[in-house]
Image (cartoon, rainbow, N blue to C red; front, top):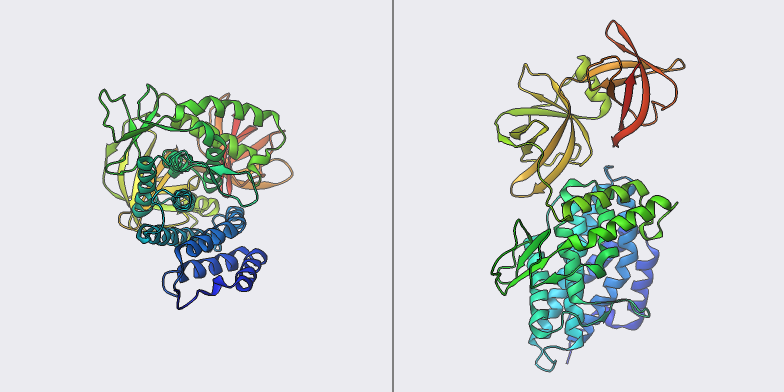
Length: 482
């Protein structure tokens, strides 16, 4: 007999709560959802079947608001409000995971319920599904999935495997034909773990999540290793997925193998379809260039041959300063800057193509893939222009950033097309008949016509070509020296 009924057990209260969630703005609705999910731990007693029903109901009610919050975050991924959207997304999934843990613990302690019943199967599936949702929001912060969340999902997969529930279809949308299985949801989580999200911008992380959903039916875990790009998971230790450089000769019975190379051909077909299409409804809200770039990234990461470094890295030591913002970098190159950033980063390693740096603090201006940075080593060294290619952050170890050198001797130039003039950064030596790269604000340099570049006392004629790369606040244009 339940002595202290939970407020949401009253149909009118539940209906009003769901209406408020559906009609409020995403941040307000998600805060309300978190409050209700957390209330199950302390506010009142609930029969396990009612507890499960309410958690599932709140889970489903949250999905439109989470999509809206993700859209708001991506529309201004590095603005001041984006921090709030990321925190709400992560906090919601953390609360949802704890609520499903509570349901599973209650199911385990209820002797009246069958150990392999339909309710338990659904809750296990939704627990894994919640972990995959949390993975995306953690990746927006360039963090890995929390170990306890991965253990929860892995434990659900292992438990379902032992009871034969891995491929049991579960309806996940009331009133719809949408069905999924624990095995399929866990493969989605594994695929995200193996996608090198630390090399992607937030929009491409979102594209990866959508692509994995698109490919979900063609991805699987197997107990038999096959030649090609392989990742392995040990169900005994439940460690994170590891890439296999060779096929194990006598694999343990606890190993499961993920071979995403099987899906690369589907990625190639999808890319060709997107090239010929004007839009892609399955990837609504994302630009087609971001989706196609993400497809190329996954094809490299998941191909039969693992990606290899072009140049060997060497351990190095030293302190360096990093500057962001195209205008600020230009002023540092010209010597006009009134302030210089502190040498707050430690140099970890270097190669011909770039270098790795680390800091105990997370600088959101630097820690974003695709950002343009100026790097200065020591007191007498010169500025180097680089692009952020990889970001990893942990509360315990701090931030680690991989930088690709764009120019070892960048020069500020004044550009003029006859109707206006603006400043840019020249990345390469000027030699007649050769190409150079120029960094400037987006839209300033047009591909038609000619541009004159004043480099000190020298005037150079350039013929702008295509955009080679771009990121927040800058474009890199390829030009020919006329």
